[in-house]
Image (tube, rainbow, N blue to C red):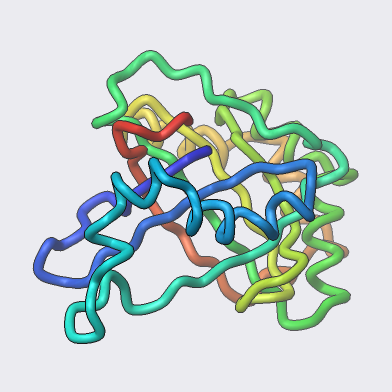
Length: 195
């Protein structure tokens, strides 16, 4: 399980926490909330959270998405990083499309088109690539890459933008205008995060 906060979260503003819960069992995933609500250890360690009153809510809202792995990257991969967690950068990207047809073309660009291959060749340390099956921003795809630190992240993206394979792929007419909106979140893992 991965638990992340945004880099540069302002303590005076509301914070965002991102939680990644991988599962091969949809039914088990759907039962997590009830299992936690009745688990003795969770109730004790999370007592402040569970007993908060209406006048001091623990959060504004919880937004959930159900993701399905890409055909060409079926397994969640733990990144191979050596730096301390405090300086690691996990980049979560969401690409929305103006239509489901254009969305499908962007997914194809990652899979059959070879965009995943380019990320692999450049050692982007991807954790996952996924299609949103249920979520607020559908139709969209989501993926997470990882880096030792911010400088490492910037060097990787410079290499990506100048890679001949990317220039050739992104110039193909069939893949033009497949992304209408991109959300980019730079995250750091919390100390108790498994990833």
